[in-house]
Length: 257
Image (cartoon, rainbow, N blue to C red):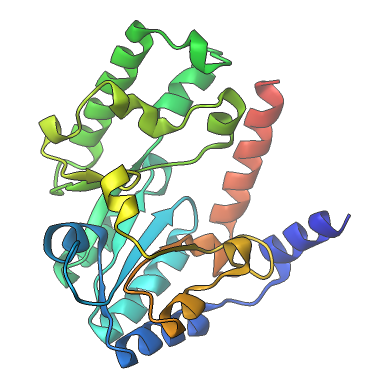
């Protein structure tokens, strides 16, 4: 019962947390961190001595919240990576992100989407032909929807159906190479993950941090390389983007039973 209440509170009652986000940026800069995007870190700071806070935003829903993240970063002249799903594309915001020197990436989910459509219910049921079809969909979507952007990093979206069938979307790239598409890194690349001294993620319900460990904790502990994964809906008040996504997930959950 408590968990249900906390979810209702998070989705409908909580106040926006963007002042908290701004305070995080200010603290990192005061503590001497370079605050930057995934691709800038990967190309220029990984393995180096600098203290780095890497900002990764997964835009699962709530494009308005993503814009508020951006305006704070613009104020402090810091970079971030924004990973957009096909359902959250916002070309006006994406253009502004690129102009600032930040990164637009693809938050892809072709494997989950394909398995839903074809009622594939386990990893062992995914054939090589399925993977080829999924890869072709990925390439087609990348070329169609991101044709005006130089995509250098991508991030696998975690759909509820990935958990149900026991396979993440980035499983696709155990068979296929994203570097053939001039993409340099996937955010779940082992070398990249192992380079972080702290991997901090926000959470939907209170205390709003996964495992109760916040990015402020990591900064105050002077962790050298800190990846900060955030989702706009976890920082904003109720809006219809979030409601639409919740209703879609509910419908799919019922349909896929």
